[in-house]
Image (cartoon, rainbow, N blue to C red; front, top):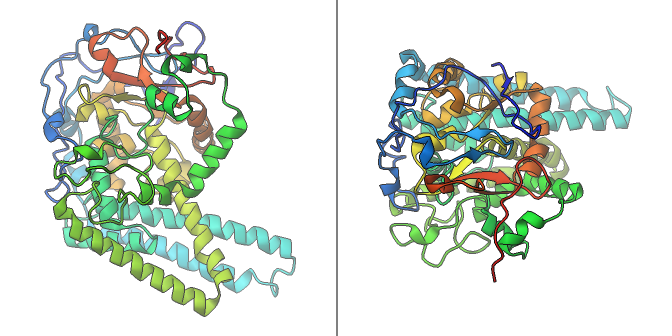
Length: 481
């Protein structure tokens, strides 16, 4: 996957790094249909009306949007191809799923976990390694490695949730429930909310993952007026660092328990389950409550099944802790668990947060536009082998989530020819670049707003801006009382 820089706009702003392929014809109509590969169980209502999924069937007219600039200063054009174009470009065999092949990867990852556990407990001991400092370093390496192997199993359970693991729903949901429960993830609860994320990716009012603050929300959060945002001084790097550390340590459990980074428009839930409810602690908006507005009534029984899985896993951990000692369990399980959480949050954050990516208001969002508002990155051997390519082929995954990971590279190459200039990737510096992107995203991507001077429909296409003087400056707005 090559990385090519586009031309620098005036002002020497950083250029968007993307893979350039064949340009997309302007004759392609847009589409807003939900993914045709969603199975009936996943085709649940989101927390707003499904009317926003209706097809536009009109050509994208650049004049209707005006000049749109991403955070780098590159001119942005709204995608103009259809989901049919994407589907037709993918070789037929890429849609084939094999339970045996997928289960082999589960076994492989569990062997990694088991062998590592055995080797460290057998040989990283005072008998073999008398220097305590060396043992501490090696056990630190153990937690890191087990965290990667555990994340690999998390990704395979993610495949189950999308029915990409095998053609059998029973196999998919059984394997997914067991693996995710062992990692303290409520499988069905996550599965349903994650499906809604896929149906509304990039929709500023309906997405379920890393929904950015609007300019108004950012101003309210820091106690400033909207017009004052363009006058803010730089955020101190130490504040950015503290925010990142908190995000990586507690971001995942916080999301499960409070729906942080998910949308907060629960009043629109069509069954009335969201009346008076907002994201936060003890509000009922979480992944464990069967009456949470994140879910529909028909999904509620499966939330209980998820909770049972968590209860069984906690029971097993308590037994193991009491039997083998909690200090051992802290190193054996809980520190690797924190690494799993870290990788999960980092991966998801960087799949959906980048200076090149747009977000859309509901009236300008559709499925194709939202799926294109994601980005592929590169994490080398760790990403492609241990994490099953979840970092490198995410754009494809948002268009056709039932394609198994072992066909994703080939399918990704196929859709690049359709997406052309609309395909986003940042593969510069490989794994090091991936880690550096976390800091970059935190500094560049603080809130979203329309491009200054956007016209008509362009006011519904939002881009990241920041107070740190990076990239395109925030729009200057007239003073308000």
